Image (cartoon, rainbow, N blue to C red; front, side, top):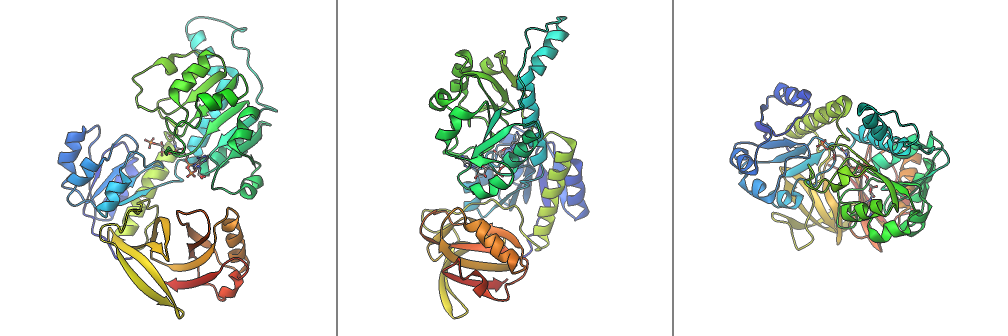
Length: 438
Ligand SMILES: NC(=O)c1ccc[n+]([C@@H]2O[C@H](COP(=O)([O-])OP(=O)(O)OC[C@H]3O[C@@H](n4cnc5c(N)ncnc54)[C@H](O)[C@@H]3O)[C@@H](O)[C@H]2O)c1
Ligand SMILES: O=C(O)[C@H](O)COP(=O)(O)O
């Protein structure tokens, strides 16, 4: 990977001090400025090669277009919904996050809210502070033997599942990508949402906010739930429709909600927060010393590695489906005597592959390290099957790039710890394969 020159970085939020320290130790000048208005940020950003944010800074297209030198937007955390990733991609700016730094903290807060919902701990504490001693009002229920529905079985969903199983909860779930045989190994039985809603005593959502997840829990899905179901949202405001939730709380169809995130933060409408069966936090999922230290360190090290041309970790910059991305080129390449039509570009100095033989990758594939390209029929069990075959061949899978399309013959790219001695090891699964060391 070609080194990228980053001399000045702006940190626009409260990020652990280790981030600044690591960047400075590596010769990068760092300025910290918090609580900037949009106009202040637009005026300020011109002078920087890099920007480090958390979730509060809205890095809109206006900000990105005003950034004359910006090469990297680093998100010290998971969600990048506050960054206009498409606008960044068009300008060749790399967006990267630190997706696992705050997983445990967000999972622990989810479990805390589930437990608090079962025993009304926040309401009882408030009541005592008001001078009361009310032992009848706060009659709870055990979590033991209850069913927890987990929608979104990625990093946080998995950690929540294993923790709540220790309370004797049965965990069921739904995820369109994580294969059921994988979640079964950590005790989560997958099923359709239609099957899931009516079974749950508790539901927790752990998906990104996208058009397909906005309002996942709405009037229709609440109506399919058990009366009195309790819900938790520690993911993103809007995955549970806020108006529908209020209606469900008022009709008692929903027996309680634990909310860490809101459509608007801070929320201007306090109807939900003020409801007696709602317990809420001001987006505290990642607010632990440990999570902040991990995220601050990870983002700084990822930026330093990128500057040194070592590796590009955590990049989330997208490609574009309408025609070629600005600056993209189409080439025909020949590997082991077979020819391939590929579309690639250079993003922030990093060569990336966007498309191979008409398979458009969901995220640009960084062309670095040992790469295995293979064609196979798209199917949910493909990933675990390939992982298994590679493990048998003594090779570790370092990354997995899937195409946007989810049916028919598609090309995939896998980063490997070392090249396979014999591509024949994949014969039973793939229709064509090639590997290169970049
Ligand atoms: N409250 C906080 O402070 C806090 C902290 C960390 C992360 N988060 C948020 O939590 C969420 C989950 O984070 P993660 O690290 O587990 O992400 P992840 O990418 O590891 O997991 C998300 C999962 O959601 C699944 N998914 C996508 N669409 C779906 C759909 N329609 N139905 C069901 N599942 C679907 C994906 O397949 C994936 O497995 C994100 O929104 C993230 O921004 C919040
Ligand atoms: O997506 C995330 O990482 C969380 O929502 C945490 O956001 P924060 O860094 O602003 O606390």
